[in-house]
Amino acid sequence: MTTRRLTVPQLGAVVAGNALEFYDFLIFGLFAVQIGAVFFPGHGPTGSLLLTLATFGVGFLTRPLGGALIGPLGDRIGRKPAMLFSFGLMGLSIVGLALTPSYSSIGVAAPVLVVLFRLLQGFALGGEVGPATAFLLEAAPLEKRGLYVSFQLATQQVAILVSGLVGFALSSLLTPSDLTAWGWRVAMLLGAAVVPFALVIRRRLPETFQRQADAKPGLTRAQLGLALLLTVIAASMTIATYTLYYLNVFATHTLGLPSAQAFGAVALAGTCGAIINPLGGWLSDRLGRKPVIITAFALLCAAGLPCFLMMAHLRTPLALYGTALVMAPLLALGSSPIMAFLAESFPPHIRSGGIGIIYAVAIAIFGGSAPFVVAWLTEVTGSPLAPAWYMCAALVLGLSAMVWVRESAPIKTDVK
Image (cartoon, rainbow, N blue to C red; front, side, top):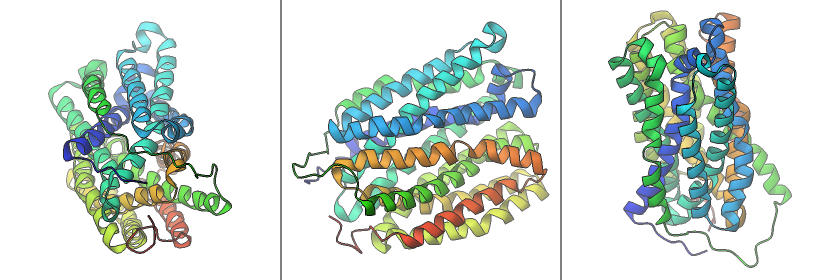
């Protein structure tokens, strides 16, 4: 297949759109405490939080459906139309969430509408990953695939950074009652405001997909086995990601720190990820995907328990920020090569669908449940170390699966 190189502005358009989608999706989780008070009152602080986190997880249920429908659509009609479709759905869902009246206004219809919009949001985001990642891989020079694909995750980290800064600003400027009443709605509408502009930019992108007349449909037995291993690896990455992302809730609900400090930790983690993700992709282009992934995730596994132990013992902003500074770079370093690994594992005619389905299934089952599981484990065990144990167990499984897969980086293979 002929690679169509992107200009810098065109590449920026792809990653900017992806960042906006993830901002919209992440902002719901960041304001879980406030949203719970609006839509699930009368259940106590813990009950309201758990119901909100369960609603957050509901959005992951439709991710496999989005990956299964929109991903293959990118293999049939092109990457660009699939990305436009998913982005439009994301805009619709975020506006709907932001404008849904409270439980006190319309009763049980309020949480029902929130769940429906979360399902639509998950469907759109599940469909975005496959076409966008395939687009970046196909636009990259052979020796820079890891770097280009790393922008997919780097812009997610930018989204975390921006959402953290928005949360920090709103929680600093508004009273707790105003933040609960309407502040979180402002955060959502900020993302929705740029949707029309981003749609125009994406319409101007070139198409990178070219159909191959001799392409054989379906997966071979070897590809199916590889897909299973890649799902385990992607699951370990998403559990680690959402455990780190849970620091916001962990800081306020478990450690008792102010919301502004919790949002500051999210912003710090996002900054680290945005910087280190491209470094992970660049290193994997030169050293191979496996060495970078195994080293980064082994170190993250080793650091998890000491970091959470430090936070639980000290309960200070410094301990919280120190954890973000240690864990976020290690996670970012290993995550970018995984996305490149996923993209290189499938031929072009099933690449978008393959990436979308594996990634969506992994995070639907494990990523979406991670905030709820760690909150529940913390409550049941009474131990603030529960998130670390859960994350480390996932990383051990991911590292075990990594041992069995073959290197995919062009520098060490004959990948074309």
